[in-house]
Image 1: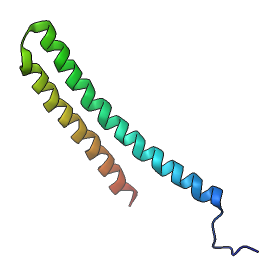
Image 2: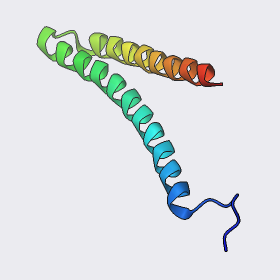
Image 3: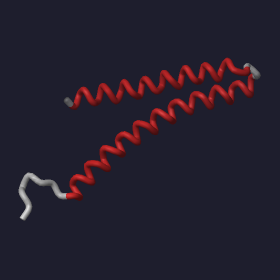
Image 4: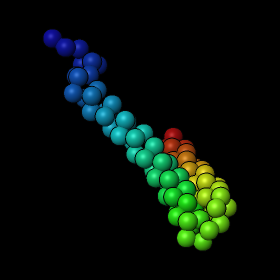
Length: 81
């Protein structure tokens, strides 16, 4: 017989999958926010002929976007405590 404090494998697996999906979602949000602004800057450079200027602006905006996503996640994590 099992002890009452032992968790079954499906329960542990379900919690692990939920935790992994949270982290993968966060990574995807960060990657998409960064890539969006970098590609937007690259596209605008091609259209306007301002070679590295708008690409660098896109990199900076992408970093700001990443920071905002991380700050939002940290605030939510602090509220849960």
